[in-house]
Image 1 (cartoon, rainbow, N blue to C red):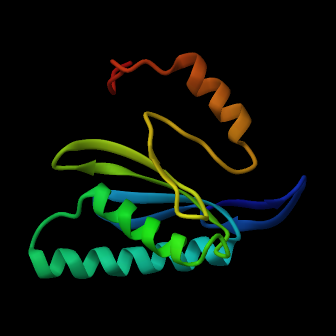
Image 2: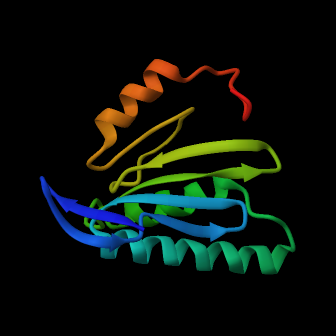
Length: 134
């Protein structure tokens, strides 16, 4: 759990920011708490149905396309800025998904009230050859 902010004011100290989509996919959200919660719940349901129907572990690109289609359909009226991340059969992935449905695959990203500080650390310390021991 983390806090939800509105400008410099903490609105909700118990707002969930990290949502489990499946055993290999998680989604972090910024924006309206209700919108991020419902959008990630819908995504988790869709991914679970797909996994049950196919018997396969879900891929992140599929989850990102579902979010892209869903958010684009609502033309930005769903206030959910999402970071989708995890590991699938093709390796680790991070996707940034905007409220209008724009999707970018990135090596790192941040969003929300602390994004400037986080991006400063990422830009300073990220290296493409990093692994768990670095």
